[in-house]
Image 1 (cartoon, helix red, strand yellow):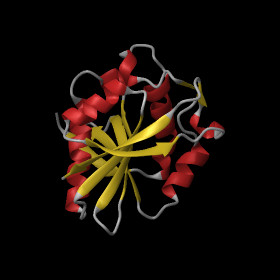
Image 2 (image 1 turned 180 degrees about the horizontal axis):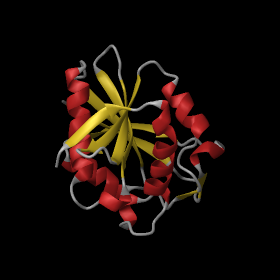
Image 3 (image 1 turned 90 degrees about the vertical axis):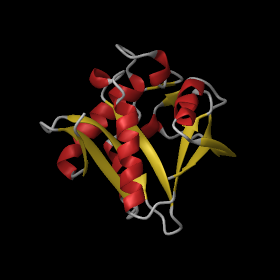
Length: 173
């Protein structure tokens, strides 16, 4: 598949927000492991996206096919120590199950590598075992580090349980 990762611009934000919320929270037409069913409501809103992108290290990249169709996106946060953070890897539910997630992930890793990254870190909700396994099959390893879930922040949705936390994974690139 011909895929281009291009820096997002402000005109892309509404589509990024809508696609992220659909891919992360709308189970219709998606395999259960691909959706955060343990959280209801939105995954992101404009305020949270703008907060994330206010960080000068943030790179929001849109994956487009040869005809310019927005197929997904990913955020990469650079760092001076060469350990970049990958977040919000999103694939359009209309194009899932065709290896597009792997393609976008590989393109994001390539982008980070060409811009000085040596390692990529990600965080995944601990209870999303299938997603953690998906990243592990792509070379990411659990670090043993965990992070708190942002309970009380309505911008990221409403958790349906009180035991959520993040697992950190990392991969040399």
